[in-house]
Length: 407
Image (cartoon, rainbow, N blue to C red; front, side, top):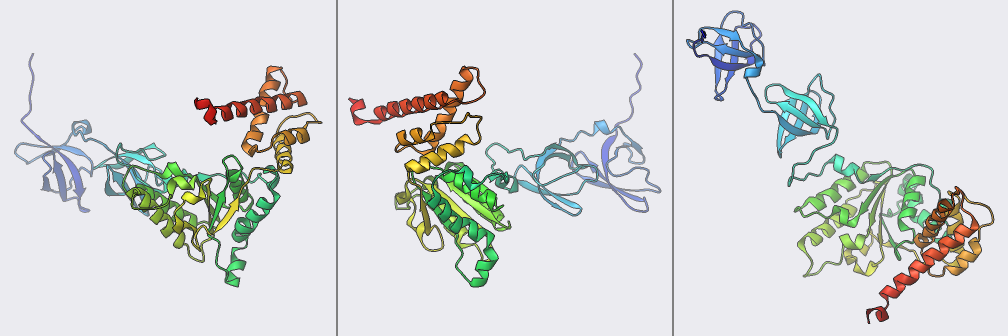
């Protein structure tokens, strides 16, 4: 087979062409840059070209022969005409692409020569062992408010509801009036009491009624094995909350996050408590933010959190009285398909020392009984059956936890 092989040629890529098209700078594969001067340079930036062995001629080459590995990064900052990309922990500043729509947090693909070419994901893709805290991370802690919750949905506890309105709802809605009076703003309110007494639900209702941004954080969610990341996340959440017109930052299980500091405390725990104190003390008089924390072990919280200007207000959620239990049962029934004449009073009388969560479990069991009987409505017999099932479960649980059960 006859074949014609050309003389060796150098492959290059055009980086820059002067306005008068007499000078061009070319990238070689070795990383070197050469300068070409000629009359009427015919190629543009990004074109791949052949340079003859004698370097006296340049011709267009197929773009495929210049192979360049793409990089993947996350958009960290958008400015007019510029984009800051995080590529493996290193920041690149690139021209804003005209053909790709970007927003902060996008995961994008690009090339050194061409810049950003496409969006791979609307959200940031994390590198293993390279965590980051950014605005997208903070968004994950924002709980949407529906605008349809009311205090009637809570059921019972009228004194607790009224006190919560005074300490949280009124300061959020009347922020300007309180500022004119010169009153010290209420920054932190501690919800204490047994599990299942409605502490989280009441906080959500207040945020809904006050039209406030609601940040819901479970203590273990912000604990990280990475040095400094937990503190950074707390700082970012508080910074974001301070920018809102109204905001509630809600910490569930606060004792797991900010326990009493001592010489035996873990270094990470001491840093987290310190960051919480700094964040709460950092609110200005303009900040319309209330921090709510729940715990069933208030004695375990770090003492510094209970000082004036922090969590110096407390609402104790006790187990509901018989009137509260009846109100809770009636409130729960409003969202269900039930028949009139349900035995609310009798069930309330029989459920001494039950929590609201246990009362709600009655309806789940009642609904199962109705469906098993091929009905789409809860009857009184289902209601009583649901109570008996939950009561039986409580008895078994109490027996398992009693000292006699270990013998």
